[in-house]
Length: 343
Picture 1 (cartoon, rainbow, N blue to C red):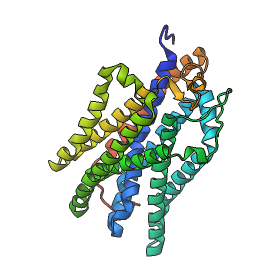
Picture 2 (cartoon, rainbow, N blue to C red; picture 1 turned 180 degrees about the vertical axis):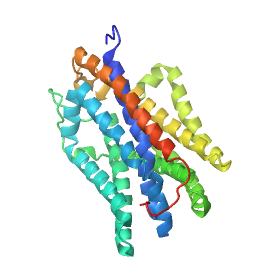
Picture 3 (tube, one colour; picture 1 turned 90 degrees about the vertical axis):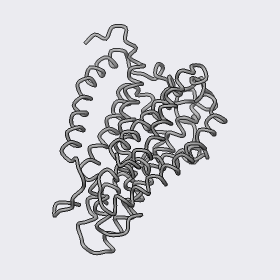
Picture 4 (cartoon, rainbow, N blue to C red; picture 1 turned 120 degrees about the vertical axis):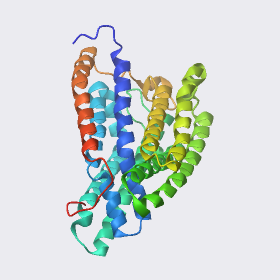
């Protein structure tokens, strides 16, 4: 397939952003449900929470694998720098995701109370740790990391744990908790649903506070992450869309339109990822304190031929992933009903 004068570098920057946004939007509510899991009290309520994500959580994580594979193929230098520089952080993230998955599968295998409580704690801690580490990673990408003249990470693990990245980790936990609470309302009924409706408003307040602090810190300390919006005021419409989507959530919840509330939450997450990508472009890894060493969509990309071939594969593969995702959600639509096959 001949793509002519298409800017393949920018196309792949956008495509990878779409894949990671899809992961945040889909696995985000999984992680949010896990973060809220211990706030429920009875074994039945906790089984309902687990089974609300039971049929879809593993499929949602396909988006993370696909995004990582796309990053490796399109921008191998970025992949090498990020996965070597953030090695310990990514190993902790992988351990948290694995432990969380094991907790989902093992929790209801035995009836003993101590057994289920142990895996309940593991499920929640794995979800919280995963959400937090994802936020810390994004915080470091926004803040910038020290790169040497070869584009390799020149710092240590503790250098990644500065206040901005840690706070973005907390903000990500808040965002996923809000998203997960809305999804859980959509999948439950009865007393548990009424309880979750109250949690949604608390989660929204928690997220708005975190997001406001993050925005102020970004404007004060990361001028490069606000430069494009200052230069192109029309792009503020993306930020406005984000604010309107968040504001619409409690309205839809109040009127019992749970699916619309979930769509508003998804729109807010997409808008947040769009803002992140707009402010970061063309950088993929911003170098701090030497911006001239940053890895961009142009100096860290594969050859044009490779990008063209990979784009052809993506145009075939992404619709398959989308079709699979849509079919799974359609098959398992509706409220959670526990039976002997449930977790």
